[in-house]
Length: 268
Image (tube, rainbow, N blue to C red; front, top):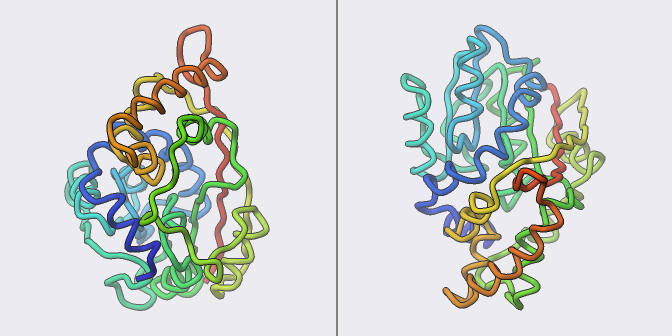
């Protein structure tokens, strides 16, 4: 594993429940488009990679697909088992998954490539386990993203918080532009054909307390940043957050947070 993979395991260890209560609803927004891109229908043998709280798995089962799922974090795998009883869910991490060549008609990875240190190798693995003619579909966060994506990060910066030294980033030689063209090139580089990529934009609505709860609980890299200086740092960032929320608060008191993601798919 790369240093980034090691730090990601540390970031997500034991945080499945906090993720389910907070960011899971945001990430579920792209599930219908992702399954459409993977051509998931009745009888499709689908692998949900990085299954998280199970949103992709549950939606695919609802379409009549034959679904299996895998996640690197045991707590996430357990959450998917609870959400989709009867689905086989394993623990495994990219770029080596416990499945034979050509096992699936389609593979879907919802916001998974954001969390691997070697994205190209990860896609090569997804291609390996997909049958000839099958589809691989992925989503990632676009960069630059929507203005709502930076709210908590701006609060951390205003509070003077800095990224912990142990919280690694993707090595430059393994990174790629988080743009439609950059993601398309990555899929093509993994050997996928008929590659298509598009940007998805939407306003995510959340209660300000709920939106803060994820980072405050240490969820994701932003949560580690918020907690990097202990309770005093969390409190300082919260004060800045409360001020910045005014930019995004609707008349009903909800946050309206513009987000931007990328969806891409290709054929084996």
